[in-house]
Image (cartoon, rainbow, N blue to C red; front, side, top):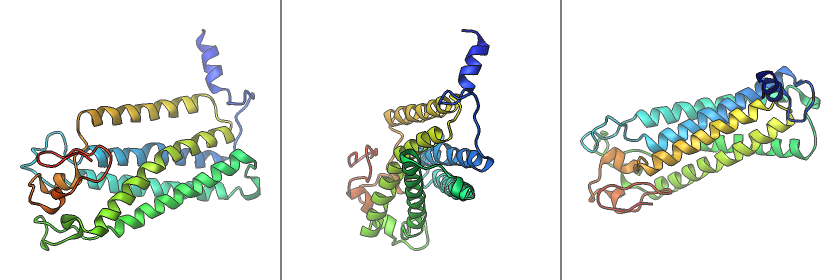
Length: 243
């Protein structure tokens, strides 16, 4: 197939119309939402899951590597901030916003995701104290794995993973509403496939180390090492088991 035909096919809107016309506010809404929900937030989740111990770190001699925490915090905060900005932009269209079942589903999912993003940020502030031998005050919600910390981890991880398929559905609906050029869903779909492939590869390599062990090591006498790790297929090294 000649390149000109491929290029024309890729640049044609999903509906087959000759032109792709959207308001600038809608276009930037889509760009910012994709940057937020397809790039920044998923990357923040992957870093938090698989890079609690970095490749050159000599664990368990070197503990409490904060690389993952800083990356996760900054990526999630930036992602939610961009999503809020994107929502504000599209609201500028007011009465010009599309209607119908696809548009309604897209809006409902969008507001739900923004709400969940806000819950995640607030929940992070309410996660309790750290404690342990790496800080001045030994006792803490995380070191002692109090009920508060356990509830936080279950809710934070569960809601975070729930957001990912919802974001993918909302993105697909948004592409349909904007009658996006065909290359857009292909590129975004390829990116999500790459994310899933990276997840599976790192999971297979056992890179998802239990947060508690990453911070305080595998000593079985520590409070957090006496309970099962929280989350799906979280690796517990030494005494203990996988969650």
